Image (cartoon, rainbow, N blue to C red; front, side):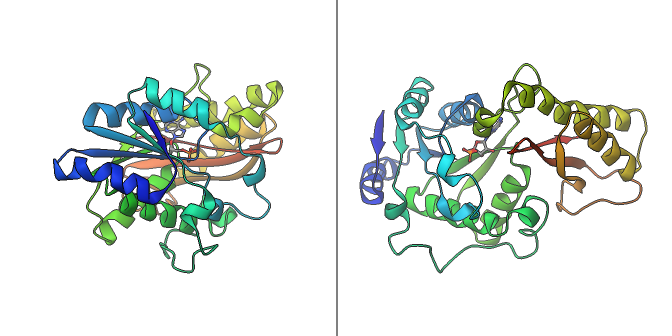
Length: 282
Ligand code: AMP
């Protein structure tokens, strides 16, 4: 397994595989890899001839007061994990390599959906994500790319972007990987104190309770949201949003649900740490 740091070198390395019609899988990450990322890498290794894991802490998707400076970085350990799971290359460019002119003035946006949910609290976040993911698609020319359902709005926007812009790439969704406790794995879990970590289980518990309520016939969106809200608040979390959204359109559901497939999306703070999670409830 090789770590590649420049775009030119990655392109040169991948070219022969393309000429031989090998399938290239891309797993975009920001590093501090855990088993959630591992699940994406395993899927790619299973499906593709060559797997490229990108490790790039993308500055343009972070707001001014967010955690860019303290985000955990450990490229060597990441490369070891990627290698142990069968990845072929880690692409780890610097910010200057990806953005030689500073912040790009050409960006990819989804004007309709980028301001909803996480986007309402993280202005500019999704255009930063869509821009870097487009660049990674173009640089690698990958045939398939793997994204986790933990970042539900993100994978939805990436699928929409690939469709809207005719990227010649298959987007694969991978289900959320959780700790045994139910907490969704995240590089940001490292920021949590023991007590915050215990309290943060209120998110998953609330989502499961809402899912159960739905199974028992509850169709009122306000009730389903309340169940999740209460579970987080009673565990000392600060809720940013809890929304029931339609899986097909990502639009907010209101009133009473009918047969549409829906997902409950959550963002909440435990201490200073912002966590997101979701559950698909039918
Ligand atoms: P990140 O490094 O946080 O940008 O995540 C890189 C990719 O890993 C994204 O597609 C995430 O959705 C995915 N991912 C992160 N955590 C998990 C998890 N617990 N389960 C599944 N996928 C995950």
